[in-house]
Image (tube, rainbow, N blue to C red; front, side, top):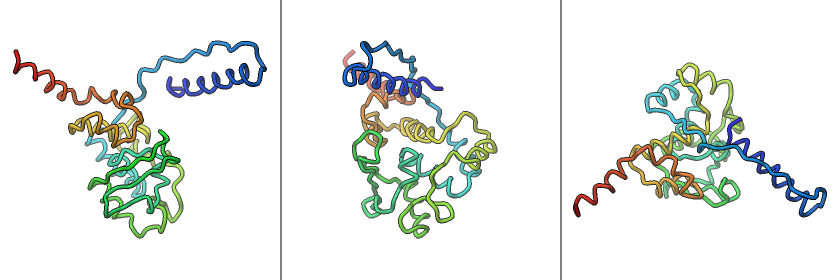
Length: 215
């Protein structure tokens, strides 16, 4: 189990123990609940060449979803549950409601050409859902088809959520500033995006060189 996952479980245990002591008076004291050291979470992302191989091997419905995920940075649940009424092709954006977004705030997502190409392809397939398979809602993406495609593409240690890491990594490589990436990806705090700062250190190089004018 990853440290971040273990810590979420431990935090839940700690919350229950606090209530058992302070509210329910089931216990006299709260035992100390240790947390595992978290190095910052997974940072697996795809290279452009790996992504191209994966797209070739995925069945069409999963390829469309994977491309859309990397283009927008949306989490799995927000892609699988995406409705046409959330999208404005005229205004080139979609909206994820606060009740659907992990950080608890509504999230407006600007649509780039890669995302638009997927949406235009999916138009008319289903009246309400954007992504479906044989007319039915897609609930699970970690399927045998997904896993087999990874094997055929020669990609190891890769999860669907890592498509979001790929989105962030590619943005940093393209020069997107951290504060803009935070808004694009819907992260609640900038500290959550700082782990991608090392991907494009040239921004700091430019900043460091500003002193050359004075020195």
